[in-house]
Length: 248
Image 1 (cartoon, helix red, strand yellow):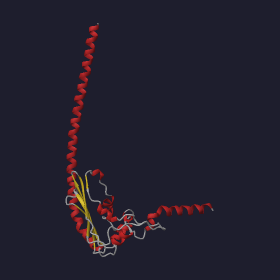
Image 2 (cartoon, one colour):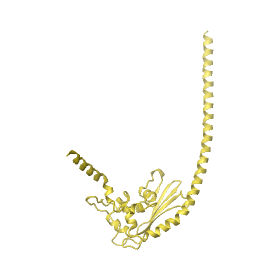
Image 3 (tube, helix red, strand yellow):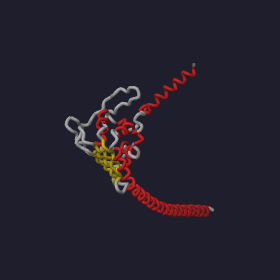
């Protein structure tokens, strides 16, 4: 009987091994099939991306002459870019008092994608001759490489006794915003090779490219709405007044 128990135990162990092998084989088969489907999906994604890129390239060619026409009109409007930039709720906070004076000399702002629309873009500020620097064009370029992002920018050639304008601390009075403590033109000094694309996040570039550039007229028309930037305080005051009135 002892011998029979030993045989039974061995058979049971063999049965467990057989089941385990079957489960492993089934798992491998399922994973292989799943990989085949995933590879098929990747091909679909690639084809879709290529089609989308073709459409974007087509419409980018259509947009360019329209942007050029817009730029020609903007050049005839005094301080257009200064007004639009200053009125933007984020970008306007980046300008020092001196920056505002320099921005009065901007002739145009341009955002240009690389020809393939995916390997990078550049943002350029074109200036009329001015008393601040020799350059008539300041450009910051973002190039997307396999190893990371390469950022290049114009090294500003400041005129004698000018240099990078520093901000000044101002007490906030009423609804007027404080000027920045650091010049916006510091943005052009941040140019380097970035090895980790996940760490690249240039908020200024993103806002200019995705928000200001597509429709600067939105912000140009908001010049007189400075109170909107301090709406919370105003609303609190209004609420307080209403509460006082209801208590009486």
